[in-house]
Image 1 (cartoon, rainbow, N blue to C red):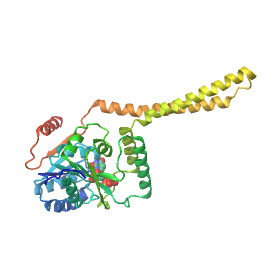
Image 2: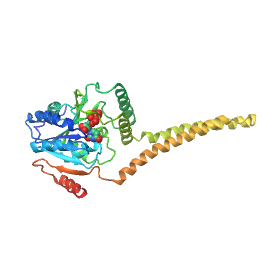
Image 3: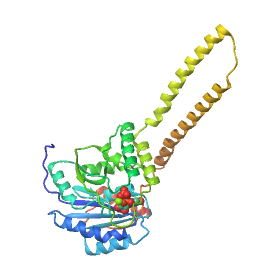
Image 4: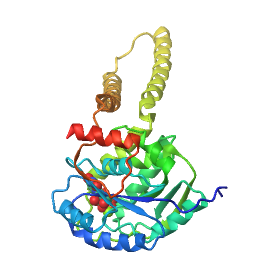
Length: 336
Ligand code: UDP
Ligand code: MG
């Protein structure tokens, strides 16, 4: 139990990434504002349009007209959910920030409970899905496998079934803002920053409209990306397997040497040569591939491109633009 009890926050930020969610915007905003208007705390809503090709931006603009607490950030193209969330966190000014999906799978009503936990002194309140009924059987099994593999390979533990529905304290948001790596696996990033964590269960709802933009292939790529970002175990694999093969070779060599000395040369074996050549070259190529994966990521990171570009931005009324935030805004303006 954390020692500190907090007063009500002076501002709470809600970060929402939108990608082709025009059909959910109205229902989401109505439900979310209903919840927030009942909190005795000022709020800001940071809506990030992640390069949607539909009417999302128009719909959001209509809500901005009605509500001064809405900030709109339109990215120049689709950068992916993780980066859209990062753009939202960059703009968040609240004492605490809630991140949630915009497809109504994360019930806004849980925000009240999250806030209560924050007041108790927790820095990260993670929404954990009570069950994964909305996912198919294969997705459930694979995600279980992924969490196992990740936690076995990476020194940074992550909580199974915890997604991006979270409340983060100011200092956690500031910590995450300092991590500008391009390969952004948010679950790993939350795990890496640490701080006082607690979880609250919630029931994930069916998607209000449309379909998940994460195809099995994209999920697989994401899982792969996550492991590569937070583990160097695959690189060590070569050392272990190589070591074992070298020991075997020494043992086998000694055996043949002794046998040749005692019995002389007998019939040469093609099979053993072919098999060992194939096995060794196969393994070598595999490991060159793994090394290449890491190399490719180093290449991506050293280019140090901006994480995202802003096409258009409408700040909320009274956004007070702290020093480095003003710099971010200026920086973004020179880019667009
Ligand atoms: N999203 C995004 N950019 C993307 C894909 C998704 O901002 O490239 C948003 C999307 O609008 C939604 C959230 O991320 O608010 C979760 O996406 P989705 O529902 O497709 O994923 P799932 O719930 O299946 O994990
Ligand atoms: Mg969803």
